Image (cartoon, rainbow, N blue to C red):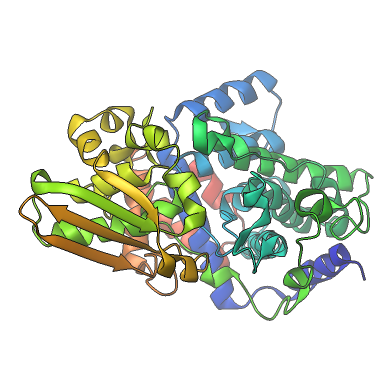
Length: 460
């Protein structure tokens, strides 16, 4: 069978048998995380812009768009996917460096509500969609290069692979050919990373467009459009087009259905680019040692060479980010926020407002940070996003903290209580504490819910 046919057979098997209980529970935690991130983002300008657009499109629909009522399925997926990724707080798979749930969950949730699916069916589709997305992402990961080929070429693999995983999930819930849905979505997924370097808000829409493409692809498959049978491995297929000869098809199919990537996907404790997290952890450890930020003379942030283009360059933009959003991609700024003490689980949304990004104390401290490559970090990356922080005080004292395992992953996991705290702090930016608790209870009860509309009605 072609690769896409093997993926379709995998999806069909799960659709018939269901996921194991522990994987359904993990998928429910992914939904909880996405919903919290989405509720927290409802006031963000990109979400408002997309909300305006989908209302202009109009149309009657049965899919819940957070903050916008019920809309047609593709419109709801577009808005919800934009919300899910707007704050850069969504989960991350390593070493593919994908944020799979932000595309797959909105696509699956829109289709599940429209088609009257059960909670278990939703979770099964999400589990398969996430697995497919990250495995395709891994097909574009080059072990020798030590990085994603998508990333090296400036491509946002999250948006590209998320469209395919979302299409598989939507197709499972629509009872249409998963292979055709993936084949169609392969012509739709796209995303460039230049906004991470020099500005622009379009990246926040990437997961929304991926989710929109996903449900559209499944819908087209349902109405008779077909996809190429060799859409992944073909001479003019997706992997050759995006990654050239630096592809590993075995990463997609080896152990498929037996060795699951899903449980090892990282939850983010901080609402900023994942490359910055170990630096924040190290800064929090330095601060816990009682260091007075005013006594700091200079700071060195050591990180994997490959991530410095995102969090350290160009230096002028990273030590003085133009907005709160761009501060979330700055190694110097996030180290400063960690040293000064932030909210939530260490730093939180209030640390990434435009006002916070212009705070003189933070900028003065960020200006003292120099980002450098670190050999040990290069050895570990990208299976973790490690960092080492070295701080020199004016009295000659030298302090160092090294973080090899990111908080939120299997080597340093968030507890259930910490994940619930993250959801509650996110959700209560928009809804009451009581409603947040109801949403959390319903989400974690999805394996037993006879219909997802019990949850989506609460969200609506």
